[in-house]
Image (tube, rainbow, N blue to C red; front, side):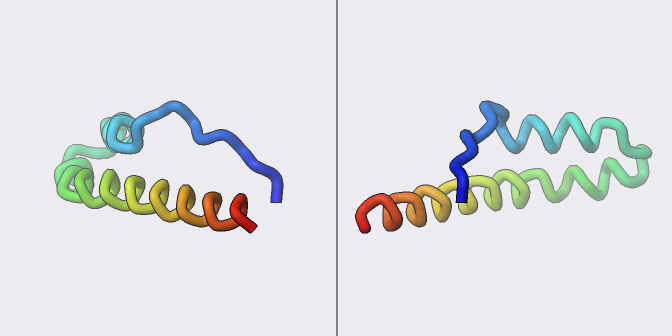
Length: 58
């Protein structure tokens, strides 16, 4: 698999920008997930680094 560099954007900022265009009724519900999205991005990045480290040590 070919390596692709991680984009320099913060997941929380991207998510907040995206939901900013949602209808007000939907936006309120989506804002409740902001922390979950940020936490998932952090967990994904940690898992990717762990996998990359394992592959580079082989």
